[in-house]
Length: 181
Image 1 (cartoon, rainbow, N blue to C red):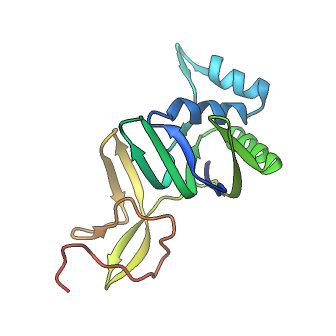
Image 2: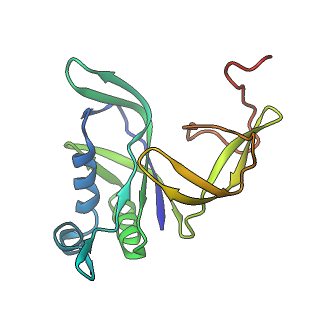
């Protein structure tokens, strides 16, 4: 299951540049005390291995980076994706955030505007087609930290929009940088 979470802070959200541990802590804290502790400390055992079936994205949104101070400041809406094959994890997190109405990151209470559940792990990409963004369903194969194999849904020569804005919608007009006008 996948949760697409939209946060709508009333002002800038200031975090250290390396904020993953803060985000991870906030996610575990919103799973409930017992469940969050179980996932963090124990996880699920399979054979001789322990799995903690939870992954999350970086925060996405407009930001300013202050390298001298080591901070990142998000302005406007912020988006977060949390995924797990264990539905209870996503349901628990989603319910907690909806009931509380906010998530706390580095002492800052940030209002939750919207949570979208995607139970089927539907994966789509935007492809440029005749000057518009076309949402195209794809099936993924092997993945590494820097590469993802697309085994179905794209054809040779398709122009995939990398890192699209969360505001991009199917059918919106787009301009390809560097393309002849």
